[in-house]
Image 1 (tube, helix red, strand yellow):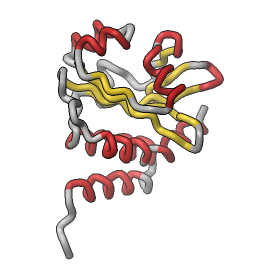
Image 2: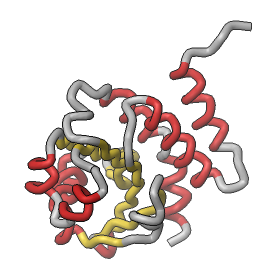
Image 3: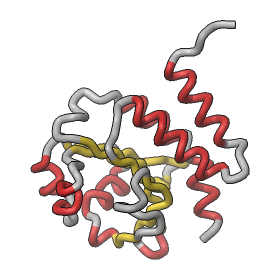
Length: 167
């Protein structure tokens, strides 16, 4: 028996989540733990896109007191999410100014010390189901491994599909 790498342990934990009683919650929590280890975050949220209402709904938060599950935002109130959903490409904001320029609720974000961000879209076919979002101190995501963030985010697809079927 060989020792597993941290990446292998993280992937195993996410895959174990798929077999739990509430697999969506378990997968989101395992992704939270995996991404907390690398590249790190002060906040992780998972937002699901609800196309028929042109809004996103928060289905997971690492800090539910500050960013509770169930929070909703129309796309007109979230121009950066609108761009990520339309392009299907991630957004990385490196600085406080990037937060100010791209998020109408920037005062709340900055007040909590969330000064840089990764918005990683989650794809199923040609659809973007939502995003996995990480926030940290200013400059934290310079040189971040977006492939690892994307891998973890994509392993959430079954959880997104399950949560979407509950609507």
